[in-house]
Length: 136
Length: 136
Image (cartoon, rainbow over the protein chains, first blue to last red):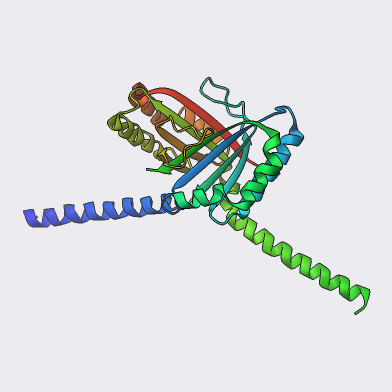
C-alpha cells in the first residue's frame, strides 16, 4: 500500500468517525439548540408542611404553560435522592422553563397569565430563588 | 332532537375535546414522562472572574454526558436576563441533567466518569448547590 492510499484510508476513516460524532451530537443536542434559555425557579412555602398549599402552587404554576413563549415547562417537587450537604431540599415546588431566546423570557415575565398567577399564588410562598442559564 | 341524541352529541364532543387535550399533553409532556428526575447543580468558582477556570469546568461537566444513565445533559452559564432581587446570578456554571429514575441518578453519583470529573475539577469550585426534583 503506497503512502497516498494509506493517507486516503486514514482520512476516510477520520471523516466517517467525524460524521458519526457530528450526527450523535446533533441528535443529543437538538433541544439545546432550539430552547437554549433555562429558567429554573424554586419556591419555599409560607406553610412548608402544607400539602394543600403545595398542590395549589403546583396547579398555579401549571397555568403558565399557556404562555406561548414557554417552549417547555416542567413542574417539580423535591426528589427523594440521597441527603448530602450540597443538596438543598428545603424548597417545595420548582418550575423549570425553556425559552428560545431572552426576548421570550422577557415576554413571559410581563405576560397577563404570569401576572394572574402571581396575584393568585404569591400569598403561598415565602421565598423564591431564580436561576437563569444559557446553554454553552 | 331527543335527549339521548343530545347526550350522545355532547358526549362525543367531550370525548373529542378530551382526545385533543390528551394528544397535546402527551406531545408536550413527552420528555417529562420519560425522564422525570431533574438534577440541577450550580457551581461557584474559586476564581469567579476567571473565564479560563469557567471554561475548564464547562469542559469537565461535558465529559459527564458519557454516563449512560444521564438521559439529557445541558451545561449553562449565567443568562443576561433582567437583574431582579429574586434572581441569583452569582454562580458561574450549571449542569442540568435528566434521569429516568432515582436509581439512574444514584448510578451517576458513583460512576467512575463522575468521580474522575470531581478529581480533575473540584479545585475549580468553591461552592456547589444541588437541586433534585421530580416531575409532578
